[in-house]
Length: 285
Image 1 (tube, rainbow, N blue to C red):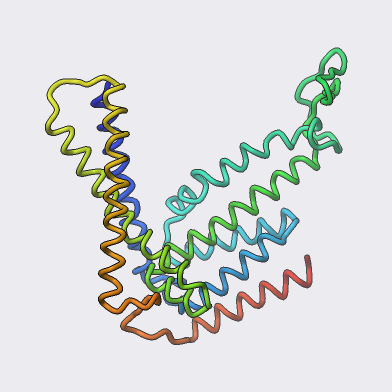
Image 2 (spheres, helix red, strand yellow):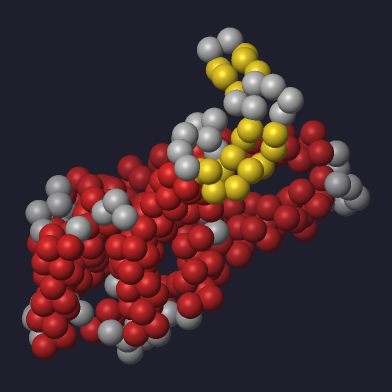
């Protein structure tokens, strides 16, 4: 059983690396968002995120989410992969959190359908449970708005990351006056999380190749805990060494590219499209 635990951990680590490498290939595809200047793309996505956060109707949020799906298709991101990546955790978790709000116990309103009927109302301290528990229209609308808002926001963020090379996205952030410390932390985190995943994979493989027979779950958990301590120590020492190496090589806090950003026709088209969405939202919200 201990071996199974370690083997599963190693398999999940390997899959995480593969997913990361596979996702980075979309930024080099010949799609619509990939051809945009990262600065105008980042600014446009930020505008759409603000609109999504301020929208309070299901119709507008549904249209915004549909727009993200169309952008994914235009950027040659497979819809199955894209929707799975978006819905696998955050929107699904949000839906589970807001599920109680659809009942009249939490959100009173016009009944949509009856769930259960008791013989009489019940009281538990300050909480009152009515005789009939129903799903209300107001509760469903409120839950739908929140889930759609989260799904659309996550979709926009995922599209931005999938269709933009990380170093180009960081440079776009610096052009838009994002603090240098934030950019530095993001750059180091992205660069070295893959290195640490490889280190974890090597530790697990070394453990498995040197072990004869099965170990108990307690022993396996203890070994994992000790390796986590080793990984923390390695990450601390490596961060100091890398920082000194970067300073000695002239690191100034700004990501550098061999190419300069330039606006093209698609960039002006994207800017006009984003502004059109903003104007329509202000007019019809």
